Image 1 (cartoon, rainbow, N blue to C red):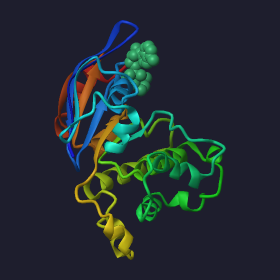
Image 2: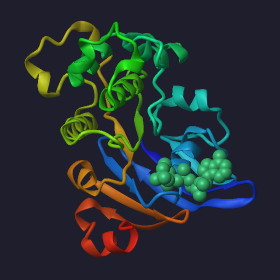
Image 3: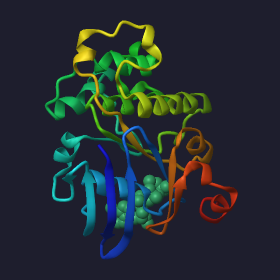
Image 4: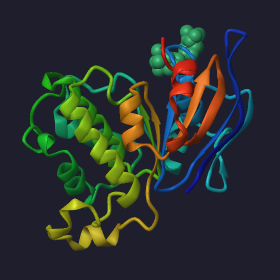
Length: 255
Ligand SMILES: Nc1ncnc2c1ncn2[C@@H]1O[C@H](COP(=O)(O)OP(=O)(O)OP(=O)(O)O)[C@@H](O)[C@H]1O
Ligand SMILES: [Mg+2]
C-alpha cells in the first residue's frame, strides 16, 4: 500500500510548522526525509500517525484517507511508527516490549517473531532482560522489532541512527534495505532456514514501504531510494537518491 501526503499543513500554537508537505512512499521503497534540526521532520511523522492534527491536506494509505482517524486506527490500518528516542519501557522485559505494540492493537503474533529475531539476533539472547538495560543501539533494534510485529504496510522511522555506533548503524541499514525489498516474508537472507507453515500463512503479499527520517547523509545514500529535504516546514528538494548531490547537501543539510 502506498502512503501519500499532499498539501499537509500543521501549526503549533498558531505558528505554522508544516507548509504544503507532499510526498509518497511505495511498497518496497525507502524514502529518506532529511533536514536540519527543527525543520519539521518529526512533526511530519506525527501528522502521519495522527499524534498531531493536520489542519489541511490529505494523508492516504492506499485508498484510505487517514486524516480523520485516531492514532490507534491509523496504526491498525498499517502504520508502524518508531519514534525518535525509541520509547522503550525500561521495566518491562525485551519480550514484553516487543509484544506490546501488537497486543495493544489486538493483533496476534504468529511467525513474525522468528523473523524479527532473525533480523535482530542480539534480541534473542535478551528476551528476559529488562528493556532499560539494553544499549542505545539494542533499544533501537527492539523498537523497530516491536513495530514490525504489528505487521505494518508502512514503517516510519525517526532517526534510527541517533547516538549509536557505526557497526550497529550498518546492521540497521542492512535490515532496512532487506525489509523494504523482502518484507518480513521468507525471501530474506535466512532463505536456508526452515520457513514454517505459520510464516507461509501470513506471508506478506506486498512489501513494506519505509519513510526514514535521517540526518546522517551516508546512511541515506546507502539505504535510500529517494529523498525529500525539508527546510522550515517545506519540502525544498526531492528526487531519486542518485540525485542527492553536493550542491543540495551544502545548501540544505550542512550546519
Ligand atoms: N509540541 C510542540 N509545541 C510547539 N512547538 C513544537 C512542538 N513540537 C515541535 N515544535 C516545533 O516545531 C518545529 C519542528 O519540530 P520537529 O520536532 O518536527 O523538528 P525536527 O525536524 O524533527 O528536528 P530534529 O532534527 O531536531 O529532531 C520546531 O521549531 C519545534 O520547536
Ligand atoms: Mg525530530
